[in-house]
Image (cartoon, rainbow, N blue to C red; front, side, top):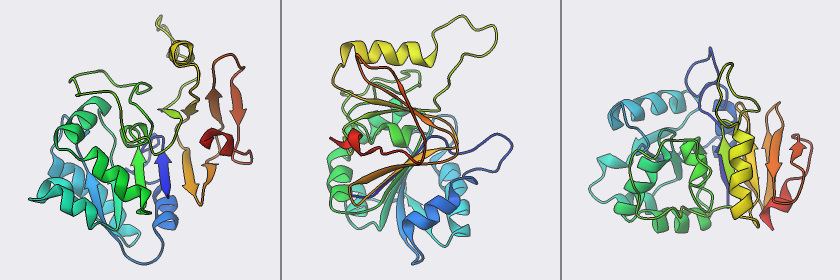
Length: 235
């Protein structure tokens, strides 16, 4: 199984998908691939706009994406794809649409067979067993919280250590501690912006200059760099 799970699409002051584009290129290889793009997390902009935005960046690295909404038979489109790319946005909307269209099991089977999977933000969230560690507002109600379970741990993308100035609400760490209090067997990876997780050949690695913060009930959080071993998360 091959996964590239990216925290965020764009760093402040940069173009869309600029910082991870070379990692995406390395992940997909030199041979041009036609990837299926899942735009369902988009809420305030159209699938066509989203497809163009992503495809413009992928074209720079020798690949292309076609949005799944263009296909009469989306299941067949996934089964015939060279790669699967899932964009960020609202995780609840993404999950609801994938479930209603019967695509969760199709994507999971395809990726388990070796098709490369790339996701950022919401697209990384759904690679986990559930959407419970998303940051997004639940603007819609999915059929259930279960997602792709391509990895056995949870990801919290866009992980922040502190709250913005003058904000009195919970920190991200407080919220994750609530999750592990009632989900005691599950690790949660706080994936800071500008970083990503790469899974290849049953080897899990962090890419990026910033550390990941890993939570587990009853244990002190771990601060792990790209030089550390992440394979314990796969057990």
